[in-house]
Length: 398
Image (cartoon, rainbow, N blue to C red):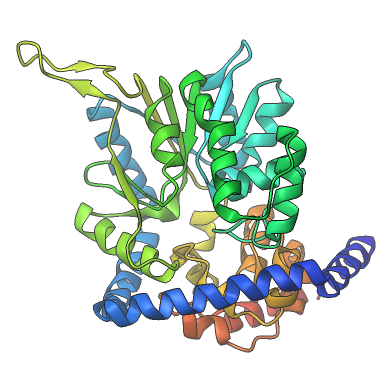
């Protein structure tokens, strides 16, 4: 009962926090305008989303097979592939790859890394770890936690960012956002080239070639995966699709619903850097990483895929659109969740712990209003999933 009491206090405090309300109202207005404009400019995206739902549904039913296929392709490309059954297995693999002594690690944004606590785990082992996504960097320096899957610092207004960066730099900074972005760039720039290891996730992976598709705008992931000598990618098995053609479609729908007409960068990574410029002899370890390691993590996903209703959660593209439509999230931010948020977050919380009760608080906070489904490109029915999760919770008590 103490967990529920603590959660109730946290979410009620958030609902009465004026700074959260201000920051979210600004973000929601921007998101809706940008996404609606993008869909008007590229109306074919709505039809493509229907095709992507079918691609994802079939892929989720065959995750283990696709993981094996992708692993074989990565190995053929001179990378190394691993399949982690549990979150602990994934962390153990990362430990062996990073190893002692102390390393400098830079990370592009990754929800899967957040899911298993990679940063805190590696920092606990004595390594220096830098989040390079601007929002994640702000959260790390605030010693807080992400409040949105794409915009982790969505709850932090520019006034608070200016105070934080002023403290870090020892200079009085204005609230001008361009200045704040430039400050983060200056603080992080040299870290990419000093780093021993770069880490990332992926938005989607083509199993036929083992190619990672990574969508971004800041350019930090391109640097984090291209400058250090070792690249480690931790990827949930639900990100796998059969072909590159499928992956292109998933990528386009993802970025369009994630607030962008077109992203600044889409990186396709299939192996370590290589060159054939001397006598056409392929040699690995050119300007980019010498080592490329990909970990496909299950951690409850294959079990979730067998549930006829809750399996929809695995279709999620992580575009974040549903969060901007949720009336509870609009006043509480990521306090309505933990690693994942809102109604769909209840399903993920139950899955990650293999315990439906871990999703109970979120399941009973969700209003089951269905606004998230209207925005969702995959038409994930969170309301029906939450009702099913509640039913399972009752059954476990019976």
